[in-house]
Image 1 (cartoon, one colour):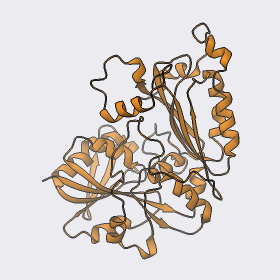
Image 2: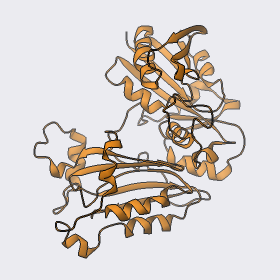
Image 3: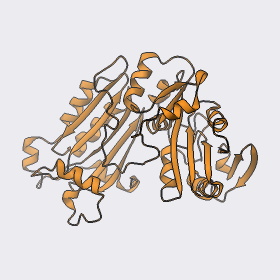
Image 4: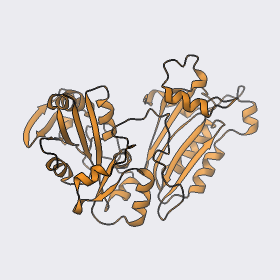
Amino acid sequence: MGTEVVLVAGLAHHDVADEVWRASPGSALVRHDLSDLAEGVVRRWVDGRLTVLELAHGCVSCTLRLDLLPLLERLGGRVVVHLDPALEPEAVCFALSGLDVRVEAVITVVDRTTWLTDATGEVTLAERGLAAAATDERTVAQVVVGQAEFADALVMTGVGGGEALDAVLDRLSPLAPRHDLGTLDVPALLAAIPPDARRGRVDDGFGPLLRGRPPLDPAPGASVVHFTARRPFHPMRLHQALDVLLDGVVRTRGRFWVASRPDVALWLESAGGALNVGTLGPWLAAVDDWSEVDAERRASAAARWDAEHGDRSQELVVITASAAPDEIAEALREALVTDEESALVDELEFVDPFAEWHDQMEEL
């Protein structure tokens, strides 16, 4: 029998996983403590029974591969997993791909008191005492934003945040119903998750960026910049413009291309003061054989095919808190190649900092 999983994430201290477990007779409750992971020690509870594990390599991926994944397959039935704060649900769901495990829901607990400050900050997990390993350089913003964005449902705790927090979450996770912890009704929360919720599905980077149709109109405390263009970025000017995405911005996600490498689709993602750039692989315009390309991506590319550039395009979605949307859009527009540069693009030699970062980029 396969395993049905409910993942519960969040930095806030809470008993939401216990509430979900109690509302699910016959289910198992799994909890991991990764606070000593750097020393190769993981503490795991199953229905309250503690097991101390010693791993040869103290890392999050080892914990998933060597313990959580085989445990879920072995337990079968319904399992509620209370994720350690260092574990992000998207990474867990990616690891579950190909297993006989179905994600029923991802629930994230959001602390109104701290979330918006965390989501726009630069504090690292290590500085907060939450790093999963000595090499863990993630920021708190990357974790809390990723947890809320990937959630099928949000449970709100703490006080504060106000309209600004509501406006940001409306745009970051528009499909996720929000319930207060103090009046939490687990069956009602799970029933409120819409049929088209993510439920653990991990995108490949070429899917729709405005998933769930978030409101695009500005609201007190939040705005959305949906930047699109059909000409490449000048790599150095874009590199210089990236600073506008690191102050007063909650989230940036999107794919782009630079004039110096027209065949490569790049991915940009920011949260608070942290930013990552990675490679998605080739644009379909640079691929001769589409037979192994996902049908959804082929259809999407065909629908917006350009006679000159094929499926190459710029598309970035920026959710702001205090940053000025117009300034972000203008900085990105100014980073595009000019008409003169476009006419000479094959003759110009571009200084490309993104190529210099290539060895550090992760294949997404």
